[in-house]
Each structure stands twice: as C-alpha cells, then as structure tokens.
Image (cartoon, rainbow, N blue to C red):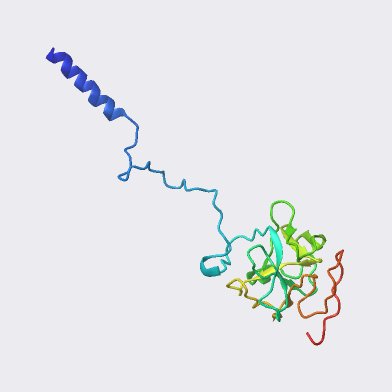
Length: 199
C-alpha cells in the first residue's frame, strides 16, 4: 500500500514539473509577453491642453473653417483645427521639396474621399501626387501644408512667412490666400484673384 502511495506522489510531482502553464501575475491578471502591446491605437495630433504634436502622422479626414472672432479672418483648418497653408505659386507640391519639408509638412489625404464641413466647397478639395510619389491634399488647386512653428490650436505663425521657397499664406474658405480679395464661394476650382493691396 505504501508503495502505491509513493508512486502516486511521484507522478503528481513529475506532472507539475512538466506543466507549461505560466503562473498568474501577483495582481491576478494574466501576464502579456513584451512587444505585444495593443497595435490598434493611433497617436493623436493634439496633445494635452491643445498642444500640437508635430511629429504625429497627418491623417486628416475633414477640412473646416476656423476664426478667432468676428474681426478676425476665417481660414481653413484640418479636422484637429490646425491651420493649413498654401505656398504662392506651388503646383502639385513641386515648390516644397527636400529641406523645405523640415518646416512645412504636406497635408496627407485620409483613406477614402476627403470631406469638408458645411462652410467649405467640397468641389474645391482634391488630391495630387507629389514628385516623390506621395499624395497631398489641395484646396482650390493649392497644395496644403502644416507649419512646424504652430504649437497649439489657433496658432498661425506660418502666415506671410517668407523663406527660401517663397511666401506662405493661410487659406480662405474661398480657396485664396488670406489677405487677398475674396468673393462668393466658387462652384468650381479656379485661379486666385489679385491680392488686395489693403490686405
């Protein structure tokens, strides 16, 4: 009888030693192997207190209009209310390449068709292919950019900046540079009118 009890005990110890089950974590939760973090979350381009995260990917589904008040001009923003800019004379992104991209990030299109809110003309929104093969959103034919100097929602530090690539402007809801003469919302894309000398 003792012999059978000893054999049973040895079998139990052997089975426990060969088991591949992991011990539960001290708090009772199952442990997750390193490197298996949730990959479904995507970083936001707006951080705490509205601070813009400039190194996040630009995936902007909607263009809208933003204004700081009745006396301030309205201008186009992305879905995170971040100002977008045009470069005077730029065509299909050819005006801003290489070193220019350190300060001016092309506004990338979303997956699917770009959209606008009710204050913008959807017909003016389009996508062009840049010289490097990437895609960029346009409004009224103007390739759109973010400026690295804008750190918070409402910042417009890129407006009327003059650098080695030209002059940069905020974009009106009509698709022209802020400071130019603007008229009724156009039905089709068209050229920008002459700049208002008083603007």
